[in-house]
Amino acid sequence: MRIVIVRDYEELSREAARKVKTRLAARPDLKLGLCAGSTPEGLYKELVRLHRDEGLSFKRVQTFNLVEYLGMGPGDPNSLGFFISENLLRHLDIPETNRHVLDGRAENPEKHCRWYEDLIIKAGGIDLQLLGIGRVGHIGFNEPGSSLASRTRIKKLDEQTIQDNSRFFPPGRTAPERGITLGVGTILESEEILLLASSANKAEIVSKAIEGPVTNQVTASILQLHPKVTVILDEAAASCLERKEYYKYAEEQRRRKGE
Image (cartoon, rainbow, N blue to C red):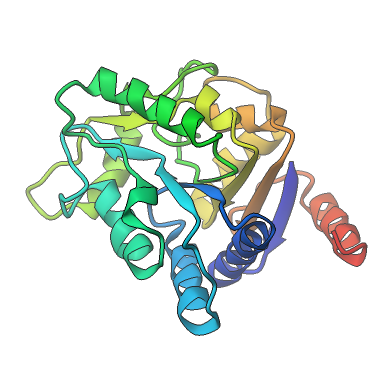
C-alpha cells in the first residue's frame, strides 16, 4: 500500500483527481470503477472542473458503478446510480454506452449480477477502482463477514451501514436493507485501487484496515494483499495510524524521486 496523508478534505480531493488525471493521460480508454457516498464528492467535483476548465476528456473512458440499492433503478433520486450521474457523469463527455450501472430493479437480480461480472470481463477488467471505506470496514457493500473471494452479488447491509446511509434519505423514508455490490474478489482483480477516507470518525477503522490483520471482519484489510493500492487520507482519518510519520516520510521520498 502507498499511504498518502494530506492536510484536509479539499487537498484529498485534489490529490485523488490528480491521480485519476495521470492514469487517464497514460490510458485514454481507462476502465474506471466508481463509488458513491460523501467521500468521493470532492473528487468528482474536481474532475468536473478539470473537464470544464482544462479540457480533460473522458470520451474514451468506460465506467462501472460499484454498488446500488436493491429495489432502486438508476432513475430513482435516492439511488446510488443517480448520485454518481448527478455528481459526475452527466457533466462529462463519456458516451452513454460507456456508462455501466447496476440496476437494483432488475427482474432477476442474481442473473443481473452474473451479467455485470461478464460485462467487466468483456471490457478487459477495471483499470482503476475508486473506493471509500465504511465505518465497519466495508468496501462497496461487502460488510463484515463477506467472503474475500466473493463476486458481484446481493448483500444484506450491516445495521451501522443502514444507519449511516439514512442521512441521504428524506424524512420518513428508510434506507434500504439490501444492496447489490461488486464482490471482494471482483474488486481485487482491478489493476489499481484508489481508496479515500476523510474525517475522524473513520480513523479507527482506517488503522485496522491498513495496520491490522487481514480479516473478513474488516473487509478493507484485504487490500493489503493487492499489488497496487494507493490510500489517500486527510489528517483526521490518519490520526490513529501508529506509523503515520513513517508513511509521511516514505511519501516524501517518493515525491523527491518523481514517483
